[in-house]
Length: 66
Image 1: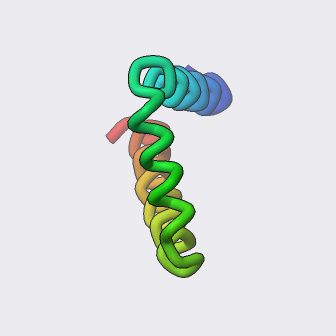
Image 2 (image 1 turned 45 degrees about the vertical axis):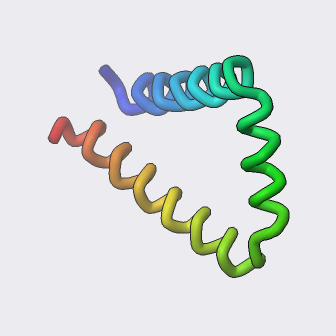
């Protein structure tokens, strides 16, 4: 499997999971959005950075076959 197909598959899985969460638990997602709006910009940025690092690590592991 080429890296492009792997990236596309990962993006597809991401959209599928996110869409499924909104479809299955819309009220939960509204509550999470409300909590997010109450967080400081620094906390949101840190959470986004942490999430990006974890996602990048998972992608690297998947591409390298580890």
